[in-house]
Length: 146
Image (tube, rainbow, N blue to C red; front, side):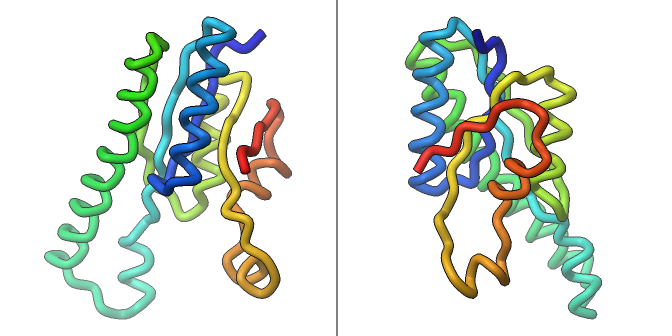
């Protein structure tokens, strides 16, 4: 049924649970997985703060890329342990949901498996929900792992 499952990850424990679920689904369906981590565009954030410093920006980007590599390594290891073909991608965007959806389209994914952090009340309003945005705009099925 599914051929390529996209797994957005932020490295959290909840996200790792979604990775494990997606890997098991991929194994059942003899599908491949594509892991993605989206790094915020710190360049815009730093410029907005008015504290543009190329050294600081470079350090922040390097740290973000190192974290992304760790998150995606978990996806690759989980897939390898289960014998599931895997590819990973790291994108930079101010709108993670948009990068997730564009990657799903570009990689011809037919399912997105992701988690929701379950923020409620004011936190949900202020922070928004990338999962909600993916659910709203996706043209393929989305499985939300709680």
